[in-house]
Image 1 (cartoon, rainbow, N blue to C red):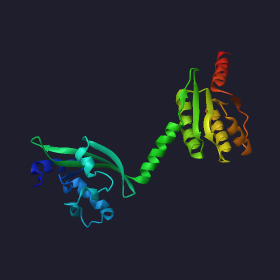
Image 2 (cartoon, rainbow, N blue to C red):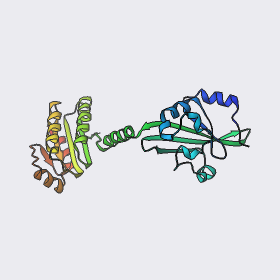
Image 3 (cartoon, rainbow, N blue to C red):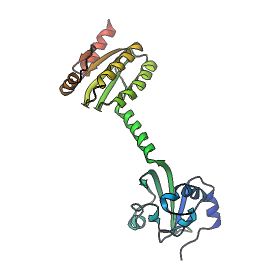
Image 4 (cartoon, rainbow, N blue to C red):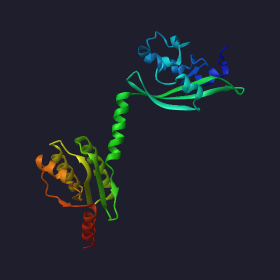
Amino acid sequence: MNYVLEGTIKDTLNCLEENIFFIDQDLHISWMNNSSKNLLQVMKKYLNIGTPEDMIGQPIKSLHKNFLQEELMYYNEFPIDAQIVLFDGFVARLIVTELLVENQKRGYLLTWKDITEREQERERTKEILNELATPILQTVAEHTLLVPLIGELTLERLETLTTKLLKECLNNGADYVILDFSGVTTITDSELGIEIQNLTDAIKLMGADVLYCGFPKEMVKDMVSLGVHTNQLSFVSFRNAIRYVVKEQEK
């Protein structure tokens, strides 16, 4: 006979804002707290149920077919912590722990948390990647920032960079900004040349001089074919650019 949660345990779990399900040893949903009921009320159309209580007695795979298979539950080390996609529209983090009462295993507690619409999760991930892809670094030269551009250069990345870089120029009192293009792999949008020039002009308005360096040969060809022209000082490498800055600061 499967274990039935005691009233004191239920009361405790109902006080929590986490979405918690009690799963019996046959891997069926035996009980859920009030927070879980509220969640299922919102998501019932995806589960094809009339009320949250309709999930009681259902196998755990009703929540997600490709997660929490019997082998995973019976043989995996606990706690199990995984991020999954639900109903092709949501991203969720599922945490499973064993429920031990008087040192005996009585089943499992499944916590369903961080329910986020998938599109929102994608946008958040994209923002994080954009931040990582456009770092702004201080250099050995005083009041000089380095921006190593890496990977595919897109309008979206340049727009993100412009906002971030202007703030850094202000916070650091930048006199020079070095844009290093040596890590750029692709430039295909004809408007990128205009955006690069707009970025340069915006930095100048903050009182800083802009230096370019590290243009790969392929990128130079792309820029010429796209009609990109610039009058900025350009150097073969960052080393040459930073040497120029140091000499200028010593004058």
